[in-house]
Image (cartoon, rainbow, N blue to C red; front, top):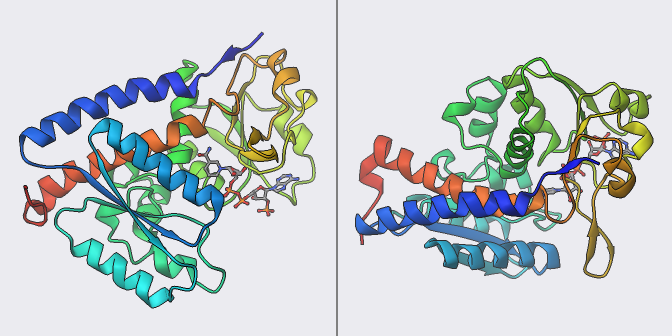
Length: 293
Ligand code: NAP
């Protein structure tokens, strides 16, 4: 039976580091502040925003939620981002998705100043990641969570055959580059792939980031493979499952992430960790744009 890679336990470890760092910043008069922009009342987005606020409260991070009606104009959201970009007491900006359909999502996201882009969504941060300069970027939290869980399995990615299922903007696409940056041999599958089962079976590591419940069956998991499941699918009210058929896959894999309790349990923590990275860089490079209170 596979090792279960526990995202919640890993999150706790990182949270204690964050708490210590925010204490040190507080002594210097800096209260880390994250601004979350939430447009409309999508239940998932409202939950994610509240989750950030609750964790922030525990860890000494001020999370300010800007909750706007879905009738708001795109230009007003952009004005708010511009104001937050200039706000010397705000260190990170995150726009919850989805935005209203009529919005140009890419344009709105790219208004965030890259130094405060704590979920790594802007073209500058993505360009650094795709250009192999990840260490200079702010990196999106969900792909980072997948990598942390692979590391928790005690595996070095160099040379490993990884099959990544999903090329979505949030998870698969940035993760593809991040895996290549770590010298993995990466196969990317998507809805047009002809032999998903074969590509998965050949892999030493499978990462699923699709949004289809139990798409990855146990028959697609090679003996001893590591299985990372980023999928979050609501199957019935309040109950979630992943993209992997977890129970049967347990018997084939050497390590596997559960849903819930795996990839998703780490992401909010990693966003707050990214906020601390942003503060450190703002202090080093643009000391003048941080104010102490
Ligand atoms: P997305 O943009 O909708 O992308 C889904 C990808 O899956 C696409 O590349 C699509 O292929 C592919 N796909 C769909 N059906 C498929 C099939 N039958 N076979 C193979 N590939 C298939 O999704 P996303 O935003 O990247 O999110 C992916 C999953 O991660 C979702 O379940 C989402 O809820 C979850 N997620 C989790 C977290 C977290 O914190 N854990 C955060 C964000 C998202 P095409 O490109 O060909 O359409």
